[in-house]
Amino acid sequence: MSVELNDDELLRYSRQILLPQIDIAGQLRLKASRALIVGLGGLGSPVALYLAAAGVGELHLADFDTVDLTNLQRQIIHDGSQIGVSKVDSAISRLAALNPQIRLLAHRAALDADSLAAAVSAVDLVLDCSDNFTTREAVNAACVAAGKPLVSGAAIRLQGQLAVFDPRSKDSPCYHCLFGHGDESALTCSEAGVVGPLVGLVGSLQALEALKLLAGFGEPLVGRLLLVDALDSRFRELRIKRDPACSVCGGRP
Figure 1 (tube, rainbow, N blue to C red):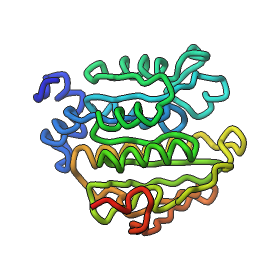
Figure 2: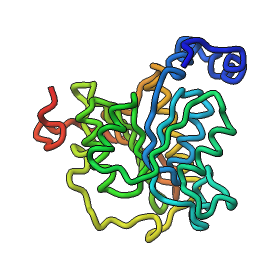
Figure 3: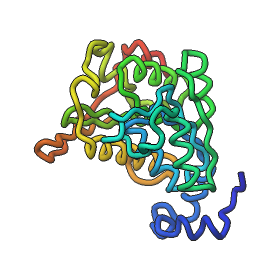
């Protein structure tokens, strides 16, 4: 991929290049970046759309599921014509039309330990947009092992949360520091429900955190947990610390 911006890119990204925090240098960093999006549902939809639109040079898309009618209330990257189609293929079709300047790589099968480790190692940053604790734990462990920053989001019912875990920072906790072994029986959106704009909001914030990390501006949500209460339209922030006895990152230098 070219390390320069062509005329089309200069025009396409002109509104964010105008920001002094991004400028040409930040846009070039985005173009040279690679991001893995795990899950192309309610969270992954806005994440993929905004990262593609912003010019992140290479998006690796991972999801083993197919588009279902019940997805369309919130998974805005898909539409009715894609029902029954692989979510990865549906997303690639939409993203390629949105921005033909970027590269799109597909992971259509469920990621096991080896393939997940390889997928994480191949990128600069990972966005966990999955909907179950087992996947979140596995993605976190792979990011810690590879030393790659992780932007983690979740939403259910009318509550959402967002955090950034960056093993490159000696003070950053990991996902396991915060949630431990979690609750394998926790309800999913298909059981408990979720309002569409909430996943859109959390996913958009995940995309923003990713752009900050990749382009190098602002203060990412490292060591902080952002809680979203959509019912009362309130945001709350909690400081979180690294657990030196964490079984996942406790041995990290």
